Amino acid sequence: MRIKGEELAVHLKPLRPLYLVAGDEPFLVGEAVEQIAAAAQAAGFTERRRFMLESGFSWAAFREELGSLSLFASRTFYELRADSREGLARELKATLPVLGADTLLVVTTPALDRAAQQTEWVEAAAASGHVVSVSAPEGGAFVAWVRTRAAAAGIHDPEVATAVAYYTEGNIGAAWQAIQRLALVPNADVAAAEGILSDESRFDVFAVTDCALKGDVRGVDRCARRLQTEGRDPILMTWALARELRLLARAGALRNPRALQDLWRRERVWPARQTLLTGALQRTTRAELVALLRQCALLDRVNKGRAIGDAWLMTRRIALRLAGVRLALHSEGNEGDEYGG
Image (cartoon, rainbow, N blue to C red; front, side):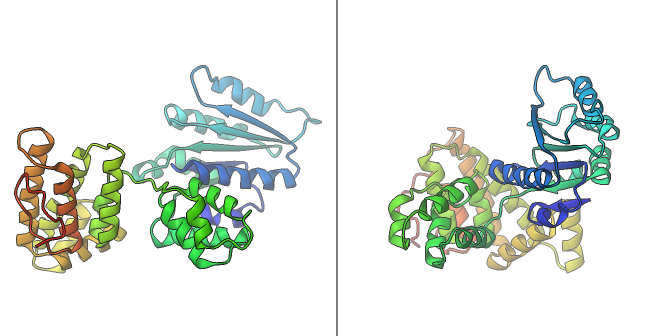
């Protein structure tokens, strides 16, 4: 069966022989594994063995161990960490028949994209046990996650949870550590939270574009400034912005909903992203999108040293305009008020 990480608790009775836990957030993947381990221990799996899929790992020896338990051996919980899926498809499928009533195998792997979800080996894993997809909550879901965890730790002031979410946005592990620290502070309030928290927000280079599509002006500015402070290169952000603007310009030229749905299908745009793109289309005209694409072309030349300008200022201007801020898109080298006219 295929399940989401938040659904795992209700799928631990009865235990299945295999759990394939896939995700890119180490804290949540580790938490899912520990959830399974606790259920396994309660069910009589008294021994736990950990393995890493790395150079020198022998699948043949691993399968031999899985299948060689004696009648009087303890029930064993096996954990196999696979940071790469190289060889995993073939070898895991060959391992499934070896699993018995006294063995439970948990395999952790990076997140499975849509194509990987449809592969034969993942289908086989889902038939033998559970494929658990773990993903980090974002936006309002992240705030809700922090509030739930804070309440469980005895912190019931929603403003404190909001502060934790703000300072740790995008970093689940940091949020959980902050909650644990605040749980030790009697009557923790926002001032206490701000006093012990530093800004540990973690953004990737696509966050600026995502915030722009959402119309999140504060998010655009905050993400861009944070990435600039970290010394990140704006080239990938230029590419991401240009990619979405090209798609929006094509969508804006279409005359009927059916043609738009055909475009989403050809470009493999999932429903959640269709909503974001549709919202962006409602905030901009096609002429504005074309102008923004020209700015991206100029920004690309600045990034490559072929034109003069402030790449970060230009990036923020383009993203803020896409987010709905009505500001002038000045030419290269202008360093005026970025919220000006």
